[in-house]
Amino acid sequence: MAHQGKVFRTIAAIEPKERQNWAYGGQEVKAGALSLFFAYRLPAFFYQGREADVLLDCREIFDNRQWGRNYQVQKEKDVLLVRFEKRDDHREVQKGEYSLWLAFAGASFDVKEEWVEQKGMFDEARQSPPSSRWVFRLGKASGSFVMASAQGRDDAVKLAKSAWQSRRRQEAELREWAQKQCGGSDAALACARLSLASLHGPEGLYAGLPWFCQRWARDELISLRALVLMGDAVLAKSIVLHHLSQIQPSGRLVGTMTRTIADAGWLFVRLLDFWPKLSKRERDFGIERLEYFVSESERSLRGGLVMCNVDETWMDSILRGGARIEINALLLAALRVLRVLKKKHPLEQQLKARVREAFLRKQRGGKGVYLADGAQDETIRPNVFIAAYVYPELLSKEEWISVFDFTLGRLWCEWGGLATIDRQDTGFVDAHSGEKPHSYHQGDSWFWINNLAALVLARTDRKRYAKYIDAIVKASAKEMREMGAIGHHAELSSAKELRSEGALAQSWSAAMFIELCEELARKKS
Image 1 (cartoon, rainbow, N blue to C red):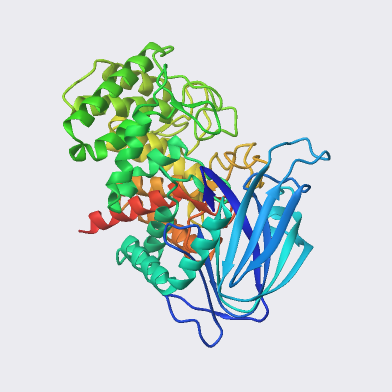
Image 2 (image 1 turned 135 degrees about the horizontal axis):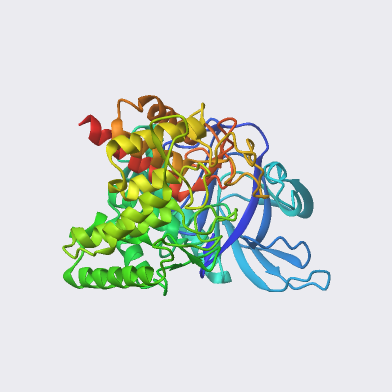
């Protein structure tokens, strides 16, 4: 649940007394059917089923402190109220106190008020402490209920009562919204569309859940075209206008995990995507910001190339500074936008020639070429697909085919994905290392880059790369339909086999799948 810009955990688990069958599509709960759903755009959660234990673990999402957790339970007519307070404790170094209210309506409760230990299998597999935590057993619900969350007592009570009284309408509204988002798509595409729609935060997109409940500029910008394809151009435009105002000296954007990011060129790739939808005032602002970005970037070039710090690219778990292929391609993409908008800049051709000189290599013992990941780094990584997506004019079609053939030969995972480093590299890690980021960009296969690569391959030569495109589509679809948080597209997979790992609902994974499907549908038509 989100309150005042912060995200809180509330329910730790709902444990039904006996096995129940799931009810889908807004069916009436009968004959032992079970359903769970959130109210549309409200901090209210519905459990529809038989008798079940309810366990609580109230806390801010990253607060793993064990001490000073206090629950006060009271009944008020037909509502069960829980006040949670996190108080500072002398046994813990971290400080910060807060509170919230939960209100349960619908079922009667056999209140237990006891602490029980809960094991976290997913946390244990990720080596993410604590993998065991003491949670609060509220008690046994007699059947279906709604839980509402609020900062104030009266607000929680009011919301729980109104949500329970209007539960059929709440269910119908949610179903109508979900059907609208899915748009009659096939199962995997419907999952991706619904997942991206459900990751809306108060003002933009969450990067992913359960942990990445922040707005990350890079992730938002990469996801924007999918929002437009889903008909959410208003949110997409507001995100672009927000980030236009955030451009820093040297052409960087404000970061979240890091101080700045070097991928600001995505902003102008996306600005061009819905240029016709902007007012004259917004266009003028966009051009002014674009010219400022180009001038700042040009001023900071070294050796004729864009340089970045070690943690400013999306591969921020490794020491990846210097001149990088996709960062330079993104500046070229911004210069292309200027040219399309009738403001040709001489830097475009200069930078294009310099990038070709610095990154394009001849294959050993072969006639083809490949693109190095860095001007001073021969490592083979999938960032060449980002370069091709944002600035296809860098190479001829024949050169791109040579680059892709070479790169696929080094990165391809037979289950349908791309490793993040040459599989023959001594640093390659074939299994996801969990919270310890050894494998993140040294092997793990990220779904967003897989989907982007398939899209680029389809644009280049659909027939030639059919094997790879189809395998990526099938792998992404299987992950959403059958694995992880079903209905969502996860962050990544181990390289050695298809798995659902990392954050289990990642916005740019879903967004790039939506965009890939749109591209493939367009090709067919």
